[in-house]
Amino acid sequence: MAKILIIEDEEPIRELVKLNLEMAGYETLVAADGQEGLTLIESHDIDLIILDIMLPKLDGYELMPTINKKNIPTIMLTAKDGLMDKVKGLEMGADDYITKPFEAIELLARVKSVLRRTGKEKANITFDDIEIFLDQRKVLKGGQEVELTYKEFSLLQILVENRGVAMSREKLLEIVWGYDFPGNTRTVDMHIQRLRNKLGTDRIKTIYKVGYRLEA
Image (cartoon, rainbow, N blue to C red; front, side, top):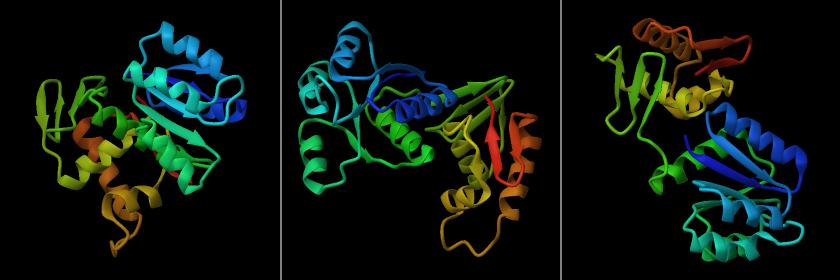
């Protein structure tokens, strides 16, 4: 998996981002100020940086020339939500921008999108004897292809890309079926049961009164 550097001076946010990324299977490095971040950038092979703008010692904007020189994809993370701040960050080379507060699912989706867009993310994921080819929308179990419907694969992909994160039935319904779907959350339950049966796995855990989480 990709190695991600988190440069954030607020410890609760830094640790929350770190926890969510590691639960999703990523390797992480952390820095509490710009100077520490610069040292890690220069001494490690990094696939993505999550960069706060307002930092002690060196701010996020001051780090961007070095980041650009090393061609490291970057998501700017900041409390600033003004349009000009976003424009400045993107013009300086940031690949994406997310403002605080944010949900874990949004952060992970943006991380996944930037890594894939910049060629830093593998297009296939494996756990146990199951291999998932995201680009081909194909799943193998023990080397044999498993026939999944379009919705079943989409549901599996969301769980895989957010593995370790509890996903509510409502959120899964919204992402996979869309806002206008006339059904209810029982649809999610039925598709989860089919996935478990077809994949022969107990990794898709039921989270009481919430939804589901893939442990992989």
